[in-house]
Amino acid sequence: MNQADTGTRAAVVGAGVVGVTAALALQQRGLSVTVLDPQGPGEGASSGNAGFLATELIDPLSTPTMLRKAPRLWLDPHGAVALPLRYLPKLLPWLARFIAAARPAQVTQGRQALAALNGAAVAAWRRCLADIGAEEELVASGYLLVWESDRGRVEARRQMEHLQRWGYEVEWLEAEQLRTREPGLSRRLSHGLFFPNAHQVRDPLVLVRRLAQAFEARGGEIRRARVERLVPASNGVTLKTPEGNLTFDQVVVAAGAWSHHLAKSLDLEVPLETERGYHLTLPGRGQALRQPVGSAERRCVMTPMSCGLRVVGFTELGGLSLAPVKRRYASLCRHTGRLLADATGLDAPTEWMGFRPTLPDSLPVIDTHPDYPTIHFAFGHQHLGLTQAAITAELVTALVMGERPALDLEPYRVTRFRRSDGQEQGERRHVS
Image 1 (cartoon, rainbow, N blue to C red):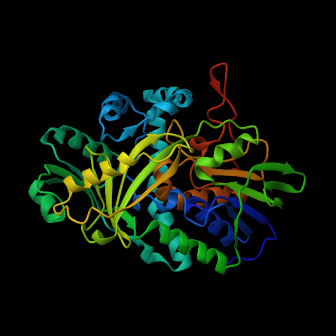
Image 2: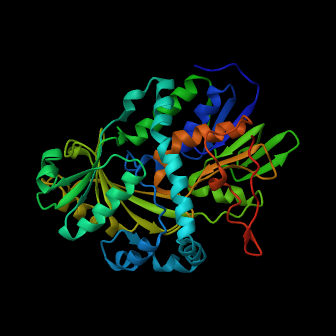
Image 3: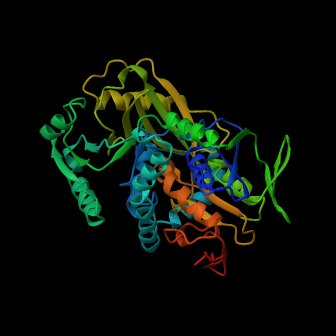
């Protein structure tokens, strides 16, 4: 139910899952909210994710272990890492930052920051969905992470013990136990880990559309418009669009892979890169599995959804303009055929490629502009946009309302990549 109208007009730039949940949270606090995006709600990266709340992913993407594995994954024609050669020169500065982020101290800080967001994620989603009467969109599904080779036992044991130290409930399953837990999987599997407290959504696009419908039913506005620049003004913030200028009291930038362009118009350099995600959806195979399943070796995730079986994979750092690489879909189909007990029905999938916003340290930006207190940021969630959307919405709403956020937002500040004489600067002074 709406709160009393505060008279404050707010804009959220971006109609993905982060933007729409933020808009709902602001509206719930009594703000008059407009969402602006050239696409409809959820039609960008939010529509194509694995539909799985990956709360166990608390390790940054850049670690010493991952850097050792990366060349082999890149050279494998079906490997999970792809760096298109013609994009590589443009990517090199970002890669240098990514490699530097593997320093042990920074990995430890990043892990703590990801664990803080992920640990609050499910409860925040429950609050969000209960508010609009859509609790059934979140499913307590459990999650399986499987290995095909017996050689992966040491890695699996290490991962299980690591996550148990962080408070995650994880169960070890041998091959026969895997078959009992998930009859839809191939009998060639060796072992796996089961996460009994994991959750998925029924369909991420349907989820965002339901959120958007609730937002509009409460008086919110969604405009199809591309915001090209933000200009701070004496009476708020002016949004420059091809259709004209719009002025609001408060603005939240949640534009995903395009957010750094808007930050640049405000004199902030944010080293955001585009991680192109690929998926297949098999409409006739939605009952192939009982729960989401991830392959540790193939680095893909299969999720049964109301729209079919969704198969997601690849870390392809290729920017916003290159065409999709068709062989990625063939690789996903190949992986699916190896992992499922019944490999029929793989010949007519829907194919999709979208843009994930990724920063070198794997952390999002959740912050207020250091110079303009009416401009706020909520972007850069890499693989965890769906997972972290609802808690991000609560945190950025606290910033807009001038309240103390529920989590320490120091790790997610927008100025953390700014350096002078080797030292980071631009420390945020959050409301206390």
